[in-house]
Amino acid sequence: MADVNLSASVRSEFGKGAARRLRREEKIPAVIYGHGEDPVHVALPSYDMMMALKTPNVLIHLDVEGKKQLVIPKAVQREAIRGFLVHADLLVVRRGEKVNVEIPIHVEGELAPGQNLLEHVLNALPVEAEATHIPESVTVSVEGLDAGDSVTAYQIKLPKGTSLAVEEDDVVIQVLAAQAEEPSAEEEAAGETEAAGEAASE
Image 1 (cartoon, rainbow, N blue to C red):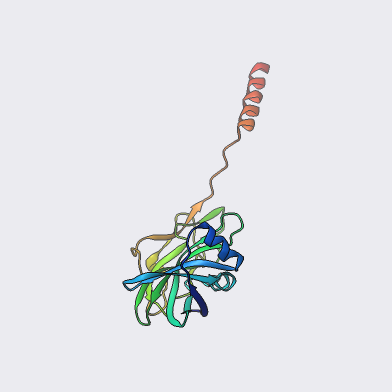
Image 2: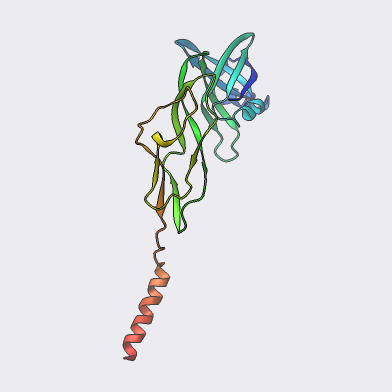
């Protein structure tokens, strides 16, 4: 897994006005919590944090005014329209401990011939992994799968030291048969008119 180094400063101002001031300074508010310690409110460099979040479950070596901590992102809020970072929750972790996270699912392979559709029942796979060795993703092959086939959590190969955090028989991906499109209201009306004309000519 990837890890990055970030510096943060403790913040004592809260509310929308304080958040706007942080944005002008190209920073975002965040909260550090975990291991029974009181939450610590900090400010993070927004660009560096945005780049770090390009890697799911990134391990962050955080320097908070000289205090070093390992954290992983647990919740991130973004502005709805433009997508810039608004707030982040960071969980304190320690080497060797297990954490529950969700990792991205990558699909490879071609479905069986036919008008089949692939449905992602789970967009990410919940797993338990060592905090400093969280897999970046898992790969699922759908090669040759046909309508009615599915892939369960148990069938997904996990890296050593990682275990499922869902039931083994939970469906992750399933293949559906494409449904014929229902005629629109205009097409139905046209069909009825044509049928009526044929009846009248008989």
